[in-house]
Image (cartoon, rainbow, N blue to C red):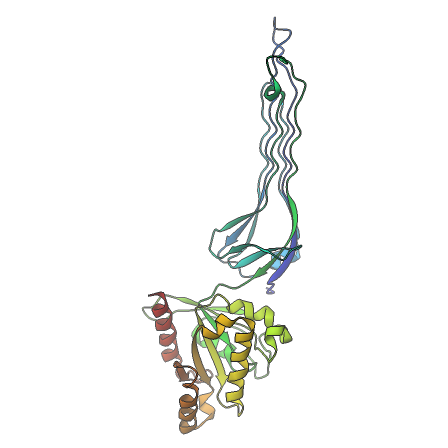
Length: 331
């Protein structure tokens, strides 16, 4: 299934039903009083966040959502039935914006959270509402109000506990496959991962956590180079950032600065997010070289460790560190 994280769509709530002009016509009562029913309220378009959805792909096939209109009132004081709401299910983490103003209208961050995207129109009033001492046979009723209608846009920000970041080919996909049961595409060339991947890490007696691997970032990602701005938003909600570096790359120190700079330029608070720095591919270096790198990077991040994603070396210790770091953040 393709991963779609942006969509534009149209919502139209139901119009209210019209009120009715009617009079009682009973035997021996030739001029009965008014008994026109009210119109029913139009249905609303409601957006609902649902756990288990991870993409907006459904919006590729349907972009218009319309609720049912209210029924018209009838004689004998019969009120019109209200129109059915139109429920639109979206992934948890969806952000709804106005197309016209780009204003955030709703941020659905929990399972079951709802947002009334378009409110149904009120039903019209039947003629009994207009009866008075001077007008006992009103021939007046009102029409129902029109339901709201809007063009909206939606973007998805994944809900994950841990976000994997790094340059292309740093080994993030391999690491995700070792930390969780996810099976991302893995190859020895850059940009293997072209869309965010999710995995669930389970470790011993700790609570499961969700890990998001975003495609490799490049210099200028915060400005959209390499689609960076689209990918970076998927780590905005994470509690911990797992910064993965290719320890065997001769430019490893410069690579760290590139990604750290992109995080800060995209959103300053990301630069201060709890971070675990992972020196990957330790199997390609001497132990002394690894120790030298660990000492150097501890000048920037206290939580530094070395692993080999390919060989599985250090994975259990990394899992424990992630679990404990998340638990400490919840205290």
